[in-house]
Image 1 (cartoon, helix red, strand yellow):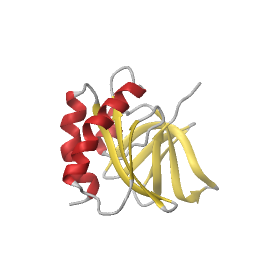
Image 2 (tube, helix red, strand yellow):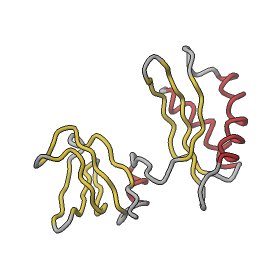
Image 3 (spheres, rainbow, N blue to C red):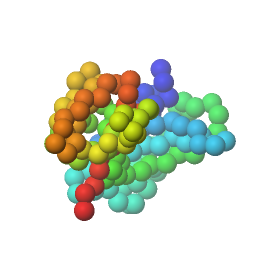
Length: 150
């Protein structure tokens, strides 16, 4: 089982018990360091107190279960207002919202396309960008994240 799946299994009930929802778990390398990040969310937004309390609750369980052999940094973070959309439920939740689609290779000279999320099916993302509607296949899309408009 992947590290992120293992951590999700034991972290989700803790996060929910503390009045938040688990948005995502990622285990990444940044330079020579490794990071385990638990992203949380809640109605009205997450603050530093939420992150700290959940960190304190999960940290001893990480030590006990020891799902990662090498050394790493553990962080609990807010999912953020410009969070990445990864799972089908994320796309469904934010249908009609402003997003930014980042592509692996440029399309019509652009690698980043802002628009309104209009559809999601089997990894394909449909965006209303100005007057046109564009569908990107799963293999084209590097990242989709919410976009804040001021």
